[in-house]
Every structure is written in C-alpha cells, then in structure tokens.
Image (spheres, rainbow, N blue to C red):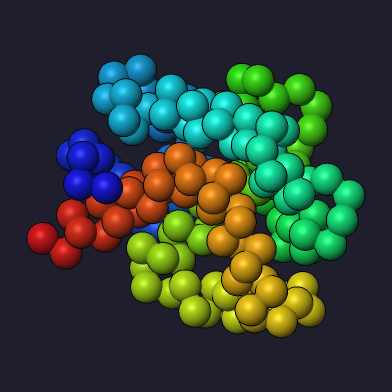
Length: 165
C-alpha cells in the first residue's frame, strides 16, 4: 500500500459512484503509473481466474455450499459491472469473477474507511448468512482475489490519507 503512487484528483470513497469514477479514469488515462493503471487490475483478474479454476479456491464457484454463500454475497446490483469486466482480459462470458472483484472492491473500501464491521453486518443481514460464515466466505474471496483486494485497499487508503493531509 505504501508503494501506491501519488496521484491527483482521486475520487472520494464516500462520494457518489467512486468505483465508476476511478474505472473511467483508469480506462481513459494512459499516463497512470503501472501500479495504479489498467495492467494492475488486469493482472488481478488473471490471478483471480487462475485461483478459481486451478486451486482449492475453485470451491467459491464450483457447486457446493461455499459457492452458494459466494453467490448470495456477490449477487447484488453492481452499477459498474460491465466497466469492471472490461479489465478481465481473459474473461469470457462468466460474470461471476467480476462480481467477486466488485465485492472485494467494496470490502477494500469499507476497510480503508474503517467500516469493515458495518460491511460485514450489512452482508449478513442482506444474505441471511450468520456473521461468521459470511466472514469466512469473504476471507476465502480475499485469498482468491488478493491482488484485486490489495489494489483497491491501497487506492482507497491512499485517497483517505491524502485528504487528511
């Protein structure tokens, strides 16, 4: 997170559609440093797809109880799903990976804003999953998408630190 580059005009994580604002900028600004640019998000998608396909983390999307929990958590309206999917250059037609990425971004933003407990409570309430099971599923999703989670956690942390100074 400390290596996330200094950038001007970052979106407010508490503002309206911060992810949409950021994805638009990443799509349109070829001068962004690699750590903040499209290649970092694309790399995150490639590793997420690999882990969901070729490791034990495939249980997040394979038939079974963990996949059902993942579906419950990730099956919310995502206004920028197609914009996020555009970075999934190995994507194919399956939107589940982008849905997991969107959930990881929301969780990363909540963590950066010190609202992780509230996020987990909202997920538990919305899905009907108990907090411990929802937390375990989110932890598995972080393991699968560590690069995506880290990217957005660093982005939102950087924004909050730079606005305090």
